[in-house]
Image (cartoon, rainbow, N blue to C red; front, side):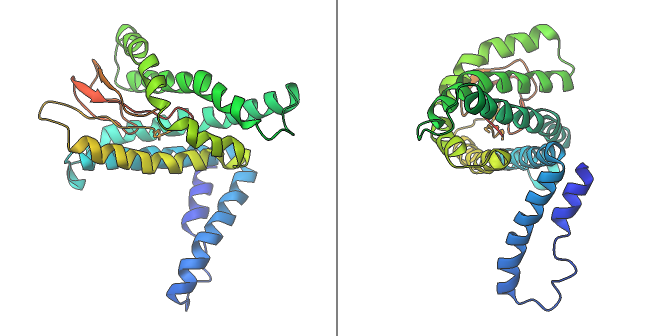
Length: 262
């Protein structure tokens, strides 16, 4: 199913594009890709969202490494792979479940589907419940892939939980007013992941001007990046990286992780 979703997007309009003008290509391919994405999303929502987050987390890590000074040919591919896996098996599936559970709870249980302010409690619950759950899940996944001890993983989770929630308040409540107020449930992950790409780029650009030799800079939602992560926080991690839009090194790192992601 993952391969089908990816192939559908990459091969869009291959049978029609011969003879198209540049203007037609610029207008038709994005539109047809959007239609195709939503079609695949309706058929296989979970695999499609897994591929979406995997793609975003991969791009986010490449951006972060590039801003740290790594050339394309010298990127840490294992780190990028860990980001891809974290997005595919963690962020995408967890966000898929969360958005549906959240929507069902507020609309079916609390009957808040016909009031204009119904997005406000959804944002609060997202930031206080799903945000910390995803941030810690992200750190846990990375720790497992790095073969770190449970004690070290737990200490990283304990140390970063509150700082990441507080840092996330600088961006994600505003983003999620749109997420829960305007975006359909099935497209929320795509929206959050799109914001994560922009956010990771901004954080990585800022961090690249601040990092010093021996210091690692980690950026992630990146809700988010994630990409779903909070934002930027300087913490000391006993890890070789916190990817998915992060960095390497046993030093101070700017950690930003998606908190809400899809």
